Length: 175
Image (cartoon, rainbow, N blue to C red; front, side, top):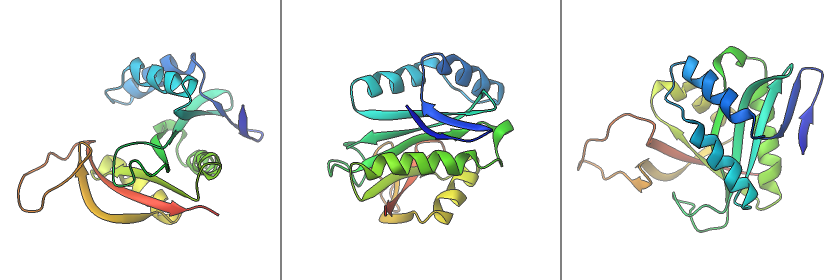
């Protein structure tokens, strides 16, 4: 399915051949990415748990985003709300409007299922661009504080590593 198309950008369903490309590109950026991540997204799509999208810029894999339908984790878990998961625009394709269009497509998918969508964002500086785009688009913290590995952090009790699992949940009312 095609979700968006103009002269430079195509947003469509993630295809099996996209996984190896994204894996190689992310590894070239220094990320610890495994092909299994994309295989999981494709399997979840086939099983009806998710909608997995890919963005192609002038024919090259540039980014991806996933909408999971009714996740069971996080502060919104079990409420039947869609969650945006694993949103990425490869570094060499950033600042071209791809991220905004991917989010537009994901929010349109989410709006078919509920009037609210949620997501989590990492807290270290590697997520700085994502933090900014979410706030600019109207996502707000849910009020449950910081989470680590799908559990709320306990104030004053433990030290948590600043890794990709330390997140803040945000939500947005859809129009």
